[in-house]
Image (cartoon, rainbow, N blue to C red; front, side, top):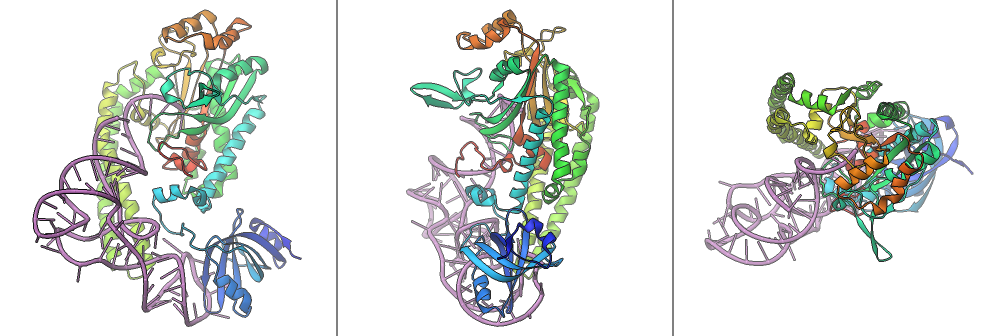
Length: 499
RNA sequence: UCCGGCGUAGCUCAAUGGUAGAGCGGGUGACUGUUAAUCACUAGGUUACAGGUUCGAGCCCUGUCGCCGGAGCCA
């Protein structure tokens, strides 16, 4: 009886007879030889069946993509097999013979792939993303665990809405309406007063009707909350967390990042200290004529690039019209489609840029940053940027105003580079009972459901704060993905709940 | 909610208002080392749906539905 081993470990089994279990990823056959490409979640292995073994050969030839099987054979080194080792098959047990697997090893549209998300996960690219995601989660948890934090799970069902009830999902709770949590923060504050340093990691829910590449209705957030921490300390924690996550991806997931086409150089630059701006400094930056000149130069550069892309596309179309073989045609058509998409994106950017510049020029202190302002600011730096002290009026009631300027609060946002947007939002909390009550009154909030929260200020209140990191946006940034829907196994998007 | 784009074979896409097509995938056959193998043959269609204009509609018009991503809002 041969040992059953993982494909990843085949290199250590050269010349031995072993079995592997997995799924048929691809198949090619000649008149007297058949190649089965088997995947098992740890790697890909080419399995060779020769026609001399008539029964094995006909069984191998009849298998459809994604059939599940156990293959036994002698391991031999061969550079033509994906993992460097192939299996000379002596035994083949078909667990289930599959036919008409919907996802071929070819280009598909996003709608089709999303409808088949449960199968799409089997493709190498999606599996790579899930591995990076896993590594980032582990790195974040390890970072907190190693720094004296205690994991505290906060409830998912929460009574009444803290702010903007329209952004919460209502749920029937024994006849009452409650809501799916959009943060564990208030509960974490209670836990921080018990344990000092705490964090939670769980799903959060937003009912915002946002249909963009940066939004999910259900996403995972890592939230630390730290007793005695004031704003500067919070920034250090945020920086440390992000560096720990990027570092783990670089040290443990090089292969996956390469498969995803992510240039590691952009990630290797990520080191503390991150640039820090106050909101007011960011506004000055937006209004700075030097920035506008720079943006206009970039606009010219993009226009020039667009001019080079268009002949490139024409050349590709020309090649396409001359291509003979079907799959070459298909490949070229795919390249042409990709290029067309890049051109469309670039054209849209070029068209939008003057509007963005105009927005930046006219940006008034007190407004919140929109996506285009965030993009402009984050593009000025080659690593994540921290922005602090936003106007009090656009921020939540629990944020502590700055003692130096009560018009701003002691909050922090972190913008990821390359236009990936906000990945962290947090603040030092208001720890004074009277001030907190006043802020709640200003917001027109009923204090009754928050008496427990106010208790935290009645009994041994201390300065404290925390922040939340959006896992999926971080995964998208680190993997260099165009869309957040690939960062989570089963994305919940507005208008999509299947599968 | 608003703005814009798209909807043709299982998939990816073609088709001046005038005979609905190609590649991939499926099926059959050929081929001793393939790398999205290749070659030959073959099956496969209510052109999203409902109206309208026209001698004639995949194409033009109106409405509905679905999908996409941008604004607002947010991580």
